[in-house]
Amino acid sequence: MTTQAGGPPGEDTDVLALARNGVLAGQWSLVLAKSSAEFANRHFWNTITVRGRFGQISGGGTVAPDGTVTGQLVIDAASLSTGNKQRDKHLRSADFFDVAKHPRVVLSVRRATLPDAGTLNAEGTLEAAGVAEPVSFTADIVAASPDRVTLRAQFTIDRSRFGMTWSPLRISSLQATGSVTATFTRSAAG
Image 1: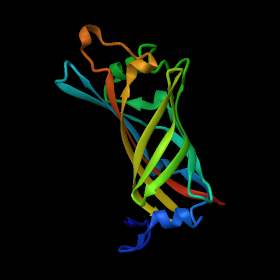
Image 2: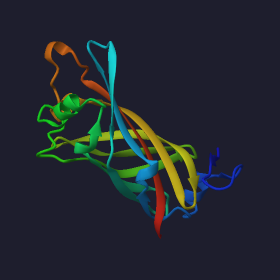
Image 3: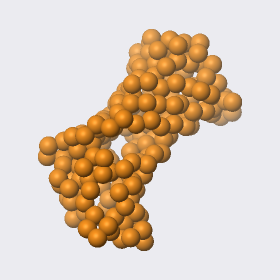
Image 4: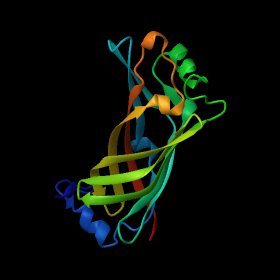
């Protein structure tokens, strides 16, 4: 399988071959303008979906010569926006992200591997509201070239595991969906 590259139209790059040949080895930096971190949660007894976005994210990663990946995505929790100022204020409170005490949400990937040219299997931790929980997920490789890679992942989060249990009369689901699109560019050769 090949993945559409960031180069000229019609150029295909086999990301699995690039990783295994050590071409991708080195340091990579997140490109904020081409990346996003979003969430969705069912509310009012599953009649509506509240969607939000974090405006400030940063991060980077390292690709080893054997193609394994480590990295970190850091999200400014106070940068969340759902389009409703009152709701955003509540989400920043101690009922949810508690940004006064825990200003960052951090996804740390301790190991990720390429089982094929189109996906990346990752293991690590997600830290939010002062609680760190193990996570594993699969990211789709949207585009890849020797100098730019774009990944997209979607996963379900049980917010109660992070102490985010506010839901009077069970109005809001404890299961939230997170989605990340992350574009990385090479910052140094391996």
